[in-house]
Length: 187
Image 1 (cartoon, rainbow, N blue to C red):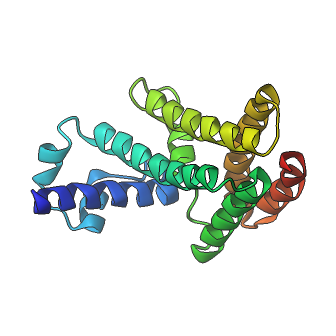
Image 2: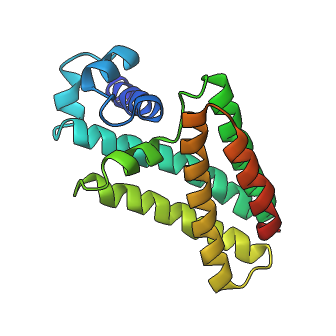
């Protein structure tokens, strides 16, 4: 079981990395196999529905990674403004470290596969989970539930938009602006 699980996990992680740099169109099964070191036959074994299943699993993996961080912040009662600033700092560092190649894999799939009946619900579930967790963080920080929900949606939209714009302009200024203005609203 170990080797098979490791191969599958490596392929999913590789797909998530490729999505954040190349998007759905640029994330081929061949490239995932090359990056993960998986054998060619492993695709059909681990992902019988092919590339769509692999992309779906990569989105869920990337989404769960962020959700775990948000859940820890919720459990630690980290103030919402600090959580948002930390997310901005994370993406800022990733953008600079990768020369603005690495964005958000979930955002990449949302941009390219919004019309896909399989991938759209997966992306929606991840975004809803992030929004729900941010809403709870905001409520813990003293915001009323209705306002917390709106601020959580605004926060997710601001991060995704700032990352997208930062990549195009090759500057962290959009993230800096989002952090500067939103941390005031979230405090």
